[in-house]
Length: 393
Image (cartoon, rainbow, N blue to C red; front, side, top):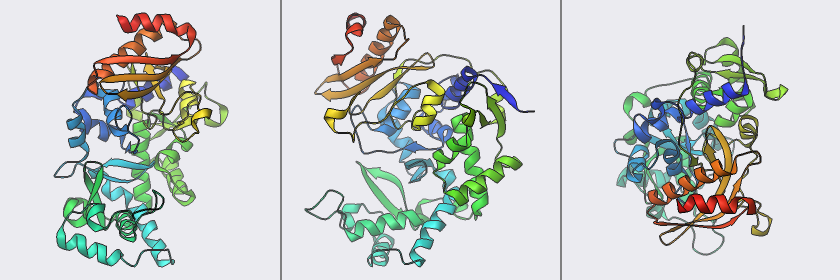
């Protein structure tokens, strides 16, 4: 018999799975958070901080940013970079599970894909000289558009995609590429999984990380193509991925039938979390349709929208408070001042409670990134008084 959950029950299970409810979510620091989440998305945008740092901050509070870097890029490797939901940091133990994707990408070469002739030369250079950055092998072409990369850069990225080299650390923001056989532990390299085995195990990881997930949520987490989604469907139906069916009574009909980790259903999620802004690339909110379904919150990243057409701001961060998304902050930094370019509160949210939560979140974030002042530029008129008073307190 399929268990039926209310939307609130599903939401709280999701929050616990994502590390926001319960003490387990804070144990083990950033490294444990990465294992819990299964994937942390990377992005080049850095406003308040880079997105991968914001993911740890949202769950752990003012964690030392050097600890976050060590959790992701350390020696020996604890994580590696590869394609999951997007370009992501992934636990090193999951290296064998992405063999299905490496095999598929490698097959493109044999179908006449446009692979630079320099690939073998670049691979030989890595083998001979050891870890390299893109600058060591030629980097981007000078002049032209910013995306105009050299053949050497295209080659090293191709080698990364097919698994001949791997990135397990960065210097600054540059990837450091190393031979996979030298960077990935031998026992992980020895695992030889079929496509079905890879997808089955990854579906379980995605389901546990999301808490309660529809088929579409799982596919989006892993960005599966149709043949791989069919493999996942089989693992869901025969139970081999470890997830069980649930029904969420208040979700839209097409999304009401979902999947969950049975361990997550054994106890009621308890606890509270502090008010915190979320990166728009945080796995709690990275899927816009899921965010609307779970939280009733419509959000999109407007960084690539022309400035005059933006509604909420360049890098708008949803604000999580009391288990709900209550508002939005568009942050920036000017010297030692954290600037909120724009602040908004969702309809139906108590202004005074939201204002205090937003103020606390702004001051805590300011301290975390080394700012000693907070300034708000644009906000809805009815929020001005409460937020001004809360910031002063």
